[in-house]
Structures are given as C-alpha cells and as structure tokens.
Image 1: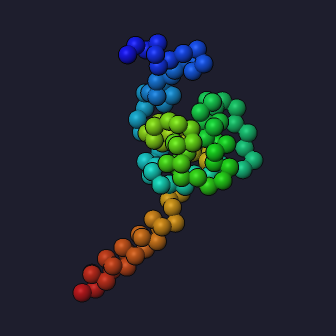
Image 2: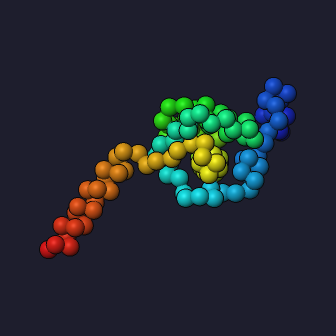
Length: 118
C-alpha cells in the first residue's frame, strides 16, 4: 500500500511523535507514572504552548490519569509523558500519584517494619 492510500488532504500535516518532544523520550523532571493523576493549575495563562499542550491543559481541568490523557489526545504515552513533564516544569499542571499507590506504599512500609521487628 502506498502512502497516498493512508494520507489525504483532510488529514492535514503529519508530525512525527519525536518532533513533538524535540527528540526527547523522557521528561526533564522525574518520570511520570502511567496512572499518575494530572490536574491543570488554576489561574495561569500560558503563552508559548504547542497545540498538543493546550489540548492536555483542557483535558486536565479535572483530575485525569496520564493514560486517559494519552487516549484523549491520541498520542503515544511516551510523548504525553514528555509533554506533561514540560507543563509540570512550567507550573501549569500538578502531577501526583494515584491514591491507591500511596495506600499500597503505606501497607508495604508497615509490612517491612513488621518484618524488621521479627
């Protein structure tokens, strides 16, 4: 099959995923978990964002997982991780682990402390 069968004028320009992240595969800051919860910071008006970052901000007006953002914007999770990481560094979004992860960590710490006490 040729490219002409897959791409047409309606599709618009196709931008490779690596171009959206300037070739980066990891965010500059900490690694963002697939189930991390992302929420847009209130009251900020950014000026120099890519169209994809604007879509992410709009998706994150309510707490949304990284996986749901990737599905909503139809981009690979790795690309969304980098874009969310950039937004996080600019203070435009807050990223936190899901509640279950924090609870599991508490349980694991209690088990570890119990084992040490033996």
